[in-house]
Image (cartoon, rainbow, N blue to C red; front, side, top):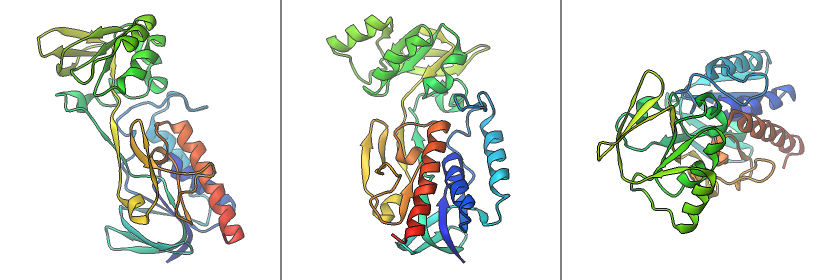
Length: 297
């Protein structure tokens, strides 16, 4: 079966791209494995008209609206490979099905590499977060922690005092230099040396225990995980670029990748995760894809 565009990833970015193409009466297919990156959190914040709504409800409503367009199809599954070139891509799925497409939009394939601290993975998205703008406000004004895994903890350490009293736990991951310590002090961030041993949920917040048995009650903890991309972008030969969080797919202002006919949007093409950014980038990818279909470029 052939489509104008196959969109790999049916979360916020993918559906936003699909909506632009659907409204241009283009035949599109969204393929989604059902593993959105923010599936671990119960509420989404910062997205106009949907502030505080459960992420799954936002996605379900978006899909319901998108599927009202007669040129849209949906396939639940995992893409194993994408080959070919513009106007003749072949998308192969793990279930053995294949589809042809004139254009490809990559909108999925990011996984988070979390610190190996015992208890942290179970609290990810509940009391352990990566985005202050998404979750800082709900933590109140006291007891916010930052767990360092590298020097990437510095932006969190400098930013989070706007949301509440902040402690940066260096965790033997890096040691701030004199200038960095001065910046942290100026922001009112407390610095704690030594390695963390474990974290656990409490009635309100979490408890971080250090290897020397010091105990810190916190309302929440922030970390900066490394991200990893699926192999699809590399299979297609898309150029990557380094972000503070890890490699992302390099795109231009129109969300076009280095490979003609391939566009990318959402978290895999931006060094920050946000529903608002994902929707905006997806919309741009969709209309940009339509313009190349329209012009034949």
